[in-house]
Length: 144
Image (cartoon, rainbow, N blue to C red; front, side, top):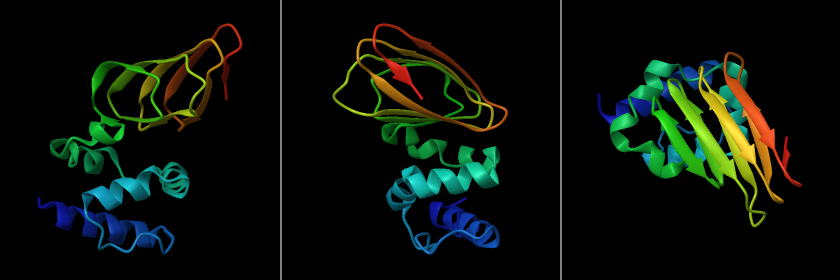
């Protein structure tokens, strides 16, 4: 299925769920990723369990991991991500030990993560129901 057709299909579904006017249905992949990664986009997707895992999988050939979105990525290790969005059959070890940025880990559609924060790191987590996140802190680190 062509990317434009997928985006139009997602838009139609999102409108039925009451998405905001930021999503117009005319976005390309890059603009859709930007919208999805925004606080409003993540909130909408988590609150509505949207889109489904099968729809997310349609975007795997476009390499969403370059945007910090990991779909059915298997076992991965991430170090000091700004924002990591883990979806589906993804099990991540996320290590955060810097205080020069805000770290954020978001789990959707059954993803799993072990978040290890140390030194002065601050990591925010958003965890959809059905996902598992184990949080480990040492020194002065905080995981919220």
